[in-house]
Structures are given as C-alpha cells and as structure tokens.
Length: 400
Ligand code: SF4
Ligand code: SF4
Image (cartoon, rainbow, N blue to C red):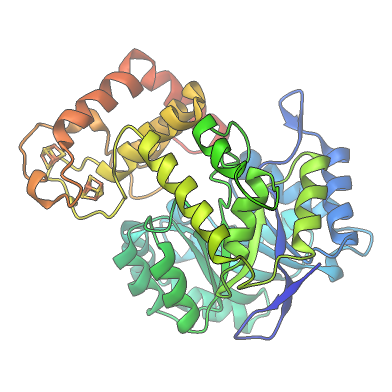
C-alpha cells in the first residue's frame, strides 16, 4: 500500500480509502458479516482511512462500521464521517447529530469530520447557523479532530467555501469525466494550493467507469501497450495527480477490493506517460460524444428564474444514456431535483417555462428549454411521486 501525507497534520494516509456507502447487501440489508470481513481485510492490507456518513444505507452504515472497527481495528484507522448538512435547522442540531454519530460508531472521536455534500445554498444555510463555531468547539472538546467538507456544487462556491475556514481536507467528486464539473481540476489544484488534503469520491462515477464500458471506449483501452481494466485506468489517472491524497472506493465485491488494493501498491503520482494520458483523454472525449447533452456543468446558465437545476437535470439525463441504468437514475433524479438534500426548493426540468433567459449564457450553445422538455418527458411522468417517496424512505428524509 502506498501512503500520502495529509498536508496540514502530517497523517500518512493510504492512497486507497474504504468508502462505506455501497456495502454488500443480503435480503435488502447490509450483509453484516461479509461487510465486516471486507473492511477488516482491507485494513489488514494497509488501508487506514475509512469513510461513512449519516444517511448511508438508511443510517445503518455508521453502525456497521462501528462493529467492523471493534477488536482493535479502530486504532488502526482514521475514521471519517459527515454532518448531514441538509437536516440541520439549528446550532443544537449539529451537536445532536455528532453525539448520535459517536454513539453509532462506538467511538469517542471522529478523526475526519466533514460537512456533507455542501453546495452554495447549503453553505449559505449552515454558516449563519454557527457551523464554524460548532466545528471549533467540537475540536476543542476532542469529539472531532480534523474538520473538512464534502462538495457537490458549482466551482465558484467551492473556492469561497475553501476560503471560509482553515479546513484540513475536502472531499470532491473527481474522475476523468469530471475534470470541469463541480470542483473539477481547478478546484483540486486550488484546494491543494491552500494546503488542504483532497479526498476523491466517485472515482468511477458510481462504478460506471469500471463496468458497462461502451464499446467505443473499450476499443480505446484495447489500443494501450499496457493492458489495464477500465477501472484501473480511471483510478491510475486520478492517482497520477500529486494533489490527490486519498481515493475513496465503495468496494463491495472481494474481487474489486483485491484489484484496487493491488493497484494502490504501485500507483504513484506523475507516472502515466503522455501516450497513456492521451488515451484517457480520448476515452473521456468518446464518453462525452455519447452523451445526449454536451453540458459541462459549468453553471453559467444559473440561476434560473423558475429555479430549474439545469446542470443537474442534464447530468442525470446523460447518466441514463451512457450507462443504461434507467430506473435507478430516474429515482436519483427524483430525489436530487426535489431539493430535499439541500435547501428544500425543487428544481425539476418540468418547472421550465421556456422564458429563454438562459439561452445566451450557455457556452456550449445548448438549446436548454428544448432539452429540458426531453428530460421532463423521459425522467418525470406519473411515476415521479412514487420514486420520490421510495427515495425518502431509503434516505430517511421527511416530505416537505
Ligand atoms: S428557459 Fe427554462 S431553464 Fe432557461 S431560464 Fe427560462 S425557465 Fe429557466
Ligand atoms: S447548460 Fe450550458 S451553461 Fe448550463 S451548465 Fe450546462 S454547459 Fe453550462
């Protein structure tokens, strides 16, 4: 296992972290003994950063991880979990959730405590509620050690959040399709330049860059002199960046864990050749050509007077066409657009009234209202309410 140093505190962290968002299931619940075996096996092989969050597996992930870290495993890892920022209505809520999380995890401290899934709106909600004072206080009391945040918003919001507090780390979505999406490469470099460690999530875009590879992309990988799986290309491309500290992978198959561990033994920064980087660039370009909307997620079209979350509508629409996971993507669309994980304000494609205000702002010249009509037609329809209700149950969020 290779290790990289967290810049502000000197922690030597395994470049592969264990993410507990997609643990193995049995009869619809976490397969407890298998999940514990997997986590402990990864730790035995050198993984020392484990990550969970309040909503994962309907609240069960933190409990499972607490069990996995018994029998001496707790002291062998840095433990990360996250404050469910969208559920916070008051300063008291912050202490309440942290106390409950410590109990669920069976520990007296969280080594890396992140504000979960920040974006501009959730940050503007949390900051006035006193979240920075909460972090300082929790740190002083030893309930948390290193404060950080995870991010799913626009690039300009990322930099202002980085600048707002002496964070130790941030967690961003990053892979070779998301170089210009959300924080993106610029955000990665900005955070690293400010001394933050960067934890990368979604290295395989929810597993999709590792499975169901479109044939046109597979043909590119087959040209490589060194044969690697699509997942290995995706992971090595991220680890090639020296700014990255840890990649979190949600590994729930023993074979994937072994594969990832083996790559993490040799994936040093700045080792991919120009030829190899060109291949990845071509694979990324091919993926983008297969997408139905050429949206880069830049956000220049925002805000929309009807509050449509335009880039996210297009992101989910593309996801459906690239990876063919129709029902799963539609459920995800239902909950993301409902706004219930952020500020509570919905942003569905069907809210578009075709005012045209966004049209001139899009550098990709996308006919936004026309495309949104397609998104609404294909991703909403009569089943939208049903999908949202099911997602609420899974995430344990109440109807607004
Ligand atoms: S055309 Fe639709 S998406 Fe664009 S600004 Fe108007 S309402 Fe919003
Ligand atoms: S629709 Fe255009 S302006 Fe809006 S996020 Fe996508 S690329 Fe950017």
